[in-house]
Length: 139
Image (cartoon, rainbow, N blue to C red; front, side):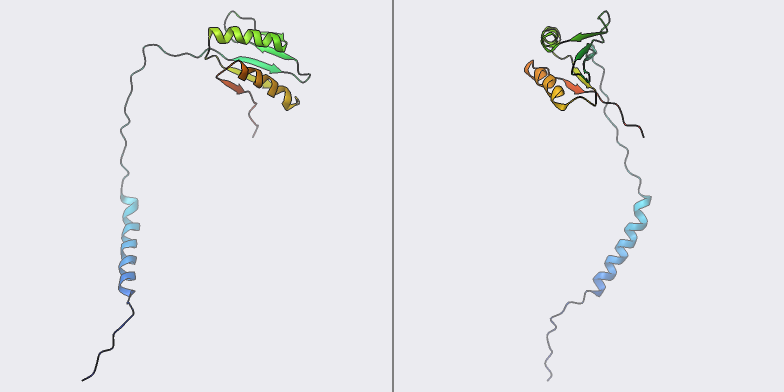
C-alpha cells in the first residue's frame, strides 16, 4: 500500500481569483452609490447680537513713532502718541471695554524690536485680543 505524502503548501490561487472578482465588483459599484445627504441642525438667533467694538490700531512708523487710530464714531481719527500716552489710553479703554481688540500695523522697514515692545506693553495691560495688520500679497 502506498503512503500518501503530506502536502505542506497552501494553494492561494483560488483566493487571489476571489479577491480580484470582489475588487472589480467594488470598483464598478462605488461610483453608482450616492453619498448620503446630511441634515444640519438649525439654531435660532440670539436676542442680543454681540457686536465687538471696532479695533484700536497702533501704527508704528519707520522712525518708531506711533499713531493711534480709533475707528469709533465721534472719536478723533488719528493722533500721535508716545508709549506712556498709549499705555494710559489703553488702560482706560480696557477698563471700559475689556474685549476691544487692538491691531498693530507696522511699516515693513521697522525693526522687529519696536513691534515687540508694543506687544509686550499690550500683554502687560492684559489685552485679550491682539492682532497684526498685514497687506495681502499680490498674485
